[in-house]
Image (cartoon, rainbow, N blue to C red; front, side, top):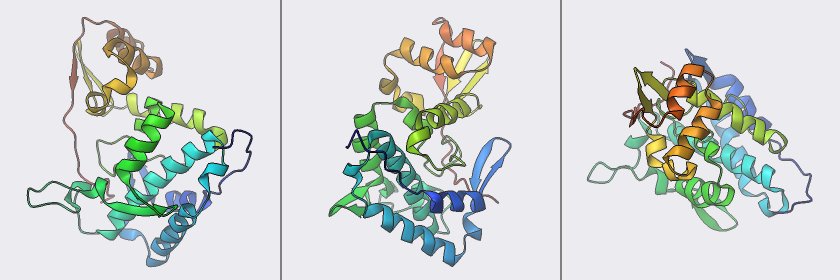
Length: 239
């Protein structure tokens, strides 16, 4: 990366898509996949091709982070648009055991390298930035996933935007839910708990963003057990 670079990437084509097709309803984000026109599909593909041709090493770290998050979300939407009949992203490219290979298929070629969604999330974003808020920024096109942000991420706003999406997630029932003294977290905190540190550190990290004083206090009390919610992989399709 270039730490002295002030160059910015124009993410307006992705923002225009979000403005047109993303709906927030009762706190849940939905994409109106069925209404996306052929013209807009072509524009989205054209934009992902444009992003693939950037020399990303020329940009600073914040701009790079915005690039990879937006690219992940855009490519995920493209996968759904390419498979318009699926009810879940897990229905795409299943093997004979019914397991999806969608996250390990090549979705873009950058610098002559085949890139998968897993590459972007687990081999680029997570290890390079080591920022657990990323889990609330990348979207897997599913109901239980943190909402697809209504805005394109931008390098000069990235810290504020990551705080916003993580706060939105943990202040929603699918992020953190309280029943009595039992706390039910998103399965994401089970799958990627180590990104937050040990359990105490994870509780503290989540509590920092939680708005409810009651929930915050219960999170910080180690005597209150943590459990994990089941994950709803149904498509975030606007019906």
